[in-house]
Amino acid sequence: MDDEYEKFIRRMNPPRVVIDNDSCKNATVIQVDSANKHGILLEVVQVLTDLNLVITKAYISSDGGWFMDVFNVTNQEGNKITDEAMLDYIMKSLGPDSSFASSMRRSVGVTTGMDYTSIELIGSDRPGLLSEVSAVLMNLKCNVVNAEVWTHNTRAAAIMQVTDEETGGIINDPERLSMMKQLLCNVLRCSNKLRDAKTIVSDGVSHTERRLHQLMFADRDYERAAGEVLDEKERPNVSVVNWQDKDYSVVTIRCKDRPKLLFDTICTLTDMQYVVFHGNVDAEGPVAYQEYCIRHIDGSPVKSDAERQRVIQCLEAAIERRVSEGLKLELCTTDRVGLLSDVTRIFRENSLTVTRAEVTTRAGKAVNIFYVRDSSGYPVDAKIIESVRQTIGQTILRVKGNIAELNPVPQESPTRFLFGGLFKSRSFCNFGLVRSYS
Image (cartoon, rainbow, N blue to C red):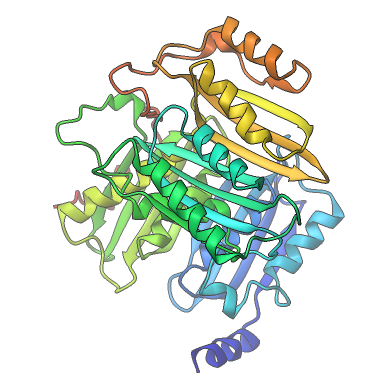
């Protein structure tokens, strides 16, 4: 009945998408109007983010039964979107004939395709972990075709898409899948017996980045050790205050801008069951500013200081997870079974730890991105990187950053990477509209 009612509402109020390349001199303006529903903002942002568009400004309004958002977007080069195929795709993805519809709204993040077996991993981070996981999969005759790995606050999460070495298809042997889960759990647990480690194997398909946020959020990677002292200059500036007159809680975020930042913060608020009623996003410069008027899905603003602190911690974690701390290395070569295992083994043998990884395979070609740090916490040694490149192949593995610009990781906590900055911008609070939280 809910599904039928939602379809009826959609037919009566179909989404309307307007794409304007004239009103703004330096960005394409995309306006989306639709019947309102929890999670709809994340769906729109996800569509734009998956196209690798840069959202420089956003104006959000969903107070009542209608959703009205405006996004200023550019391509990665900072230019307007003029490609007709992409503009047509945006219209179809967000318009009345799209899958931006009832069934998708209850499972934000779902994508299509079932050509592989998906493995979800969560556990304690340590140097060499990706190498060990890759070795287990290679020994089980699995080929890693796609993978994304995040590390944050001593925790690691990964989603790996694998195929059978012989058939090139999904793995559906129950005994083999059971063995895979057992061996991977053993690898994840061996470094920390006190924290849970989980391995989930399925042939279902989900949006990788959204799922990684959910895994790390469920694992409580936002919790800090008791007595841990953080460098305030390294943290994103996140505040939550209550706007008593309007019965909203106002979330303000100031941090260094980076790709997909808006998706990460909206994803976290959605997973925490908060609804964004009004919002303003400005990311035209090096500093990103986001401000949201929110309520919990039950209609209430933030009720206690403990809840306020949890919202702040979760948003900080969402911002930090994807920050690429370390030297960026790009590997491009013909794909083969065991490639990821071999490359990460060489990293481990040269005392390099992977802080983040993106593994993709297209038409038999592997294009992998690794962010690496020295396992001891010292800056990466240029001689070690050159030695690694000679071992793997200098034309295959390329350095995509400046080694001299990297800062050392604190030695007392070599696997924790904290990011952010101190920034300033205008807020509702500055105008006296919001009273401090109490």
